[in-house]
Image (cartoon, rainbow, N blue to C red; front, side, top):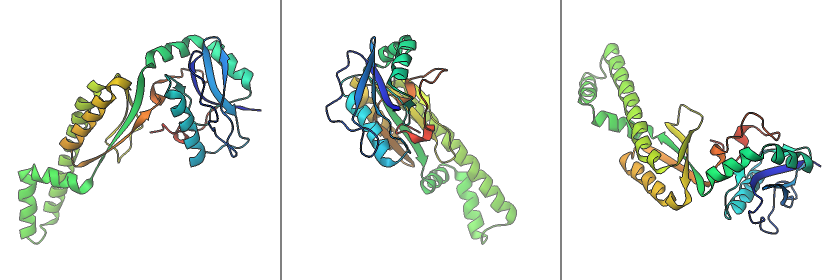
Length: 257
């Protein structure tokens, strides 16, 4: 029977709540495997596992429940070992690494922040802040739309102004949020997302971080800020060069960005 791995804790970590349901249909009971000073939170693995919403939420719920009692190193959705013995072997082989990560991440949580431009609001902002664009737009309007060359010129000016605004917005958000975090991890870049970063934040300073997020919202009303958290520190586990378990694609786990 394959073994599904949710995360790794210190052996002294309290056991998961009784009756907590894991992945699968029916849901597999969650249990633990201990080797030395480390414990893996596991269940039997379903024969066929796909990134369905029910199982993604079950994976995240197990980590959230375990994480309420202290630090847990989260494995990504779909982390499966051939059997229990393989899991305990990995705990023994990589004990130093996992113990170092548990110490480093103790007392922290992760928040993922995405900043997406609201197109019409961005355009209004750059036009209101750029008299040359306003003057050319008004001249084109009075000329019935303007010539082809004038339209191209206006378009190029707007594109340049939007790009400059985006650069300014990223810098503003970075200056406001990074000082409130212990560490920062950049997520995958995309054309529709100016900022995609995960912030490692102390549990006792989370309110200050969230207050900084609200300050960014007020300062940059032309952006849509999406905040996910608190989460286990998915982006800061640093699994290293040898991955201990087979894994589903990165996009198939609750902390994927």
